[in-house]
Amino acid sequence: MLPPIILVNPGDSKRFHSIHPPLSLGYLASYLGKHGIETVIADEVAGDNVAGIIEKTRPKIVGITAMTPNAPSAYRVAAMARACGARTVMGGVHASIMSDEAIGNVDIVVRGEGEKALLDVARGMVVSGVIDGASISDIDEIPSPRWDLFGMDRYAASRDRYTRTHLNFVPYNTRVAAVITTRGCPYKCIFCYNSWRNYSMRFHSPLRVVTEIQELVEKYRIGAIFFFDDDFFVNKRRLEEICSLMIERKLNIIWGCQANANSITLESMRKAKEAGCRQIGFGFESGSQRILSMLKGNSASVEKNKRAVDMCREVGLLSWATFMVGNPTETIEDLQQTVDFVRNNRIDGIGVHVCTPFPGTELWNWSKEHHLVDNVKDWGRFTTGDGIFACDTLAPRTIYRYRDLIDYAQRPVTAREIFKHVVARPHLLIDAFGKPGKVFRMVKSLLVH
Image (cartoon, rainbow, N blue to C red; front, side, top):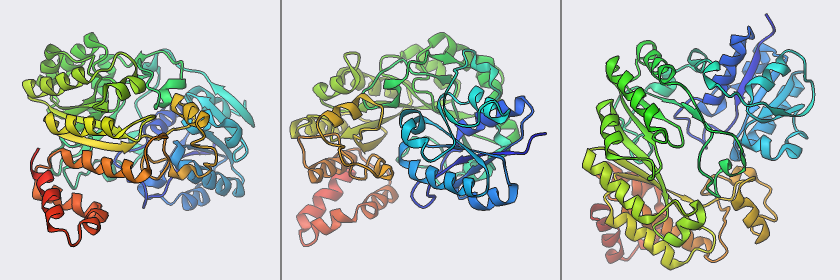
């Protein structure tokens, strides 16, 4: 047996909240385990002491994954691992895109999918440099994530209803888990990492999906599942088979997923509800057709998004939607159309983010051309809210103000949510201090559409 490989999810646990385990590391661990290689997973975002684990385990290899905002933490972990004599490998979207930068901090950079590449590293076939990870056409070849390496209780134990998140549908004290059943994405949104990838869409078989869920239910007492696929409804025949198997096996779970407004039908939604679906999430992004077309192309429309909300309500499913502010060329009129869209459509929950130009996306290239990211060095600010903008027409103050206006336009359903809203944004109270009328209007906007 080779010495263990430590797989690290880096990040500041005080800054980033870990609701779900790092599934990408779970897949790497399961693939290596399939070939007889022992691994340990350390999730720094969930509070693991990575330095202590490295010191105790003394691995020969430390593999690190990172999205852009976690890149500084990834480089810190790499330096720590190198000081202990470990060979360092970095993968994930940031390393794939910024490979020249990453290789200055680690020994090996894997661009693309990591399973086969990391196996070569573990076998000593690669010891340095930038390598391209080969994709796996039949993803059923990759075993289920190594749930046993995560410490599932710290993720599964729900202490709240997760109101105003993608887990809005999960009842209090229900154990929850997340799964991914596809790789690739059929869409090319300019703000998404998928815009630079050329991977084909690949699917786990329905039997594999339901067997994995059954393991989570029986072994970890999971009562709710969230599917992280970009569009769980994109293959309707597969969706039908998954739902039929879930009903046949009487799994007795509830679940939520993400879908494109183009993919849903009343028939498929009713089947999903019968199988336990309670919520569908959509990336609506904007109430302005001009902005929506810029971000997502001609296939997206405000009318289709309105229809998606109506269909959810007709079938009896909750709707969840994300929006972005501070988009390229956006105007006050565009933002007001988004406010109006949220006010006029009975969406059950929303998330509002600042449009952020992540490296490698079309939006990043546009922002570079417009000199919006010329002096950006701190990757830790790429959090869709920390002052990195892809907009040359609106001031930051205006962008933040409309982010809050859109957020408030979606009616909270409990006094507790109202309290969370106000406490989370004390600047609104400061701004309203001494102006009772303004306070009244703010509270009214929370209670009334």
